[in-house]
Length: 360
Image (cartoon, rainbow, N blue to C red; front, side, top):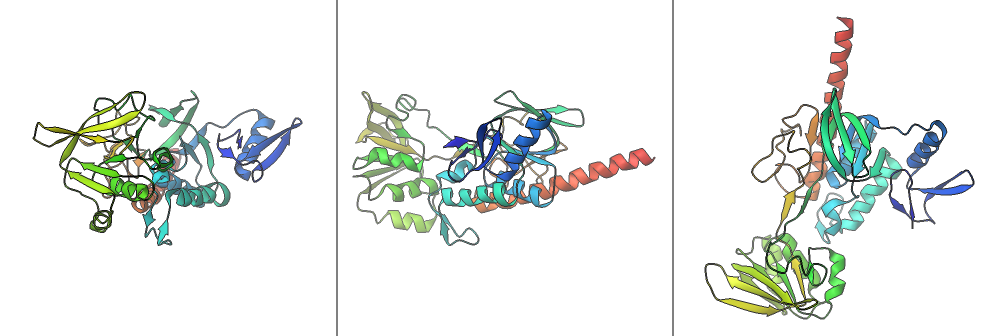
């Protein structure tokens, strides 16, 4: 694998777009990144100012970027990675156009659409700060590079919640996992625990079935997943379900060996032998980079209007980081498109007001 020198994306050497410069071969994810590279090499002035910056590379951010490209907006995408939480989804059902598709497959199609068909400038980096600056905003990345924009769309999604119990940190990657499908290979033919009662927890149970020996499903509430999924997993022969049980502790020597659980509102505990545990207890919004600028609710979600605008003029938000109803990939994608349309209208209105002020 090679790394695109412009956007920092990993690319395959045999399929990447290449360019020769000063006797050296460079590899790019797209013609757009190659052209940016050659232009900046010529004029030695890397571009840092745009009308619109989109922060986040999940379904909402990628859709917003594609819409910004189709509307010929002066836009830039900054994302820690491409895919967000959707990469971990092994079963996406009834996303329009597909009866069934996996998260990685859908994100690969998004990525191809972004870098091949509807290119906009982009870079893989983590945004650490967004601050007001002049008539817009300044965005600083983890690489300490700064970019400016008149409008920002925040699509930073959510991250997985932790239990906060004894042994959780100690046994991370030593038996404690947080939902990545590739981690299943570490627990083949072993006894495992899945913590959670929602769709993601029960999907993990289905993924583990046929790979592991026995599965213990531990939920602090009665199962809350879709009825169809609950009905399917209850038929699995190697599954034991513990509803209204709380995880108390993870134990072991060098690696995880057992999980202690307790019935809610009771003192007696029980120990489950397990060499792996998958924690699937929900997500928390990644809103801290703008929580000092916009209104957020008690859950930390960015509060938005129907057009994805926030309480701060010029900042829009879309996807799971917001209080929009329904945490679904298809909803996040639609919200991303809506945010791009709203941002475009905002920028057009800014331009009209500026022209009117000049003529006055």
